[in-house]
Image (cartoon, rainbow, N blue to C red; front, side, top):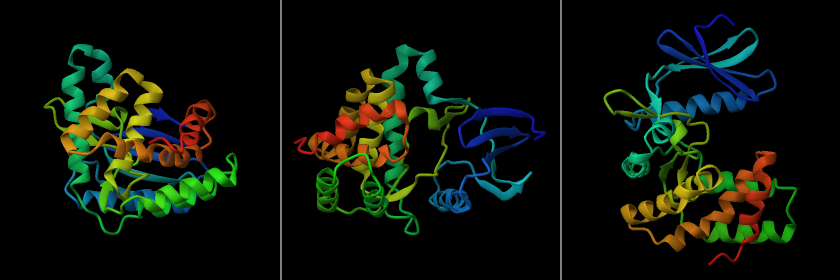
Length: 249
């Protein structure tokens, strides 16, 4: 593929820069429905007015499905955090403000978060039927909301332009649902990769959103279980510990 630059390479996709575009090329075994759903998610979130890359095209390149998006010039927030450790608190505050801005939006055509999580829990083969039952029961008891939820909100998915404007990338996991579930997902991501920031993040999210920390914590086993479906071996032991804490509170 003759593109200007390879930006990232994953197990099932490669991301390229080509002029003013980012082109995400999926592997040959990647489901067509998932590609089309990702493009549709991006387009639906685009309509909310959030600053995200616009979808330009969905196409087939050399036999592989691809999504073409606007290219956003800048550094990821994760890179900025690593380069400027003295500004961590400032960056974290902007990060939480941006997450709350996302959750202030509505996109009624997005898939429902609780439906998606119920499907994922049902598909878990590595945990007992008893634990799956407990997880389903807890999920069913959680309040239904219709907030836009990113599904993978972390500093590596935020591009900061030179003027400080932030754009949010990767809407493949977007749903509508309870914002505290999305916060629980972000907390687990910090715990996995930036443990020292996890509690600081959660305190700040709860303070700014006027949410009880215990309420977000109730989502942790559910979110960990839904994340286990990905089958990432290096995350398995970590996530299993959270799933076992069914009676967290």
